Amino acid sequence: MAKILVVEDSTVDRLVIRRFLADTPHEVREVEHPRQVPAIVEQWRPDLILLDIVMPEVNGYEICRNLKRNRRTANIPVIFITAKKQKSDIYWGKKQGAEEYLTKPINQDVLLRTIDKWLADKKHVNIDEQL
Image: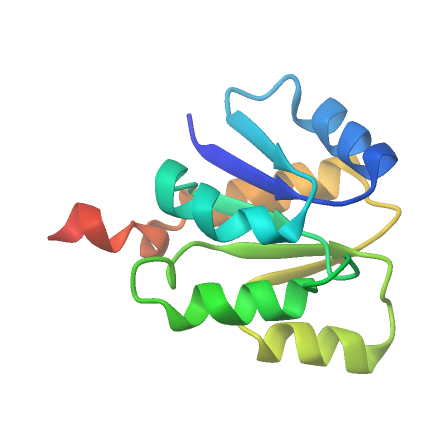
C-alpha cells in the first residue's frame, strides 16, 4: 500500500480521482488548497503526488519545482493532472520536474497504470529511508 497525495482545488475533479482510486489498496489524502502542500508532505511523506496546475495563489508548477528542489522530497514522483493541453504546457510541466503529465478529462485506466508504473519504480524511495 502506498500513500498518494491528491492536490486539486476542484471539488468535482477531486471526487473523480477519489472514485478512480477507491478500489485500490492505497491510502489517499486530498488537499484543496495548494498552500497546505508543504506541511502535509513534510508530515505525511506521500509516496506519490497527483498535482493540478491551475490553482489559486500557488500553481502546480511552483509546487512541483519546490518539491524537486528539496532533497527530502525530490524523489517523490509528481504526476500532473491538468486541463492545460498545449505542447508548451507539457514541456513546461516536465521542465519543473514532473515525472508524468496527464490531461483532463482523465481516464481511469491511464491514471491507474501511471500510478502503478511510478510506485513500482524503486527510484522514488524517500531519502529519510535511505539514511
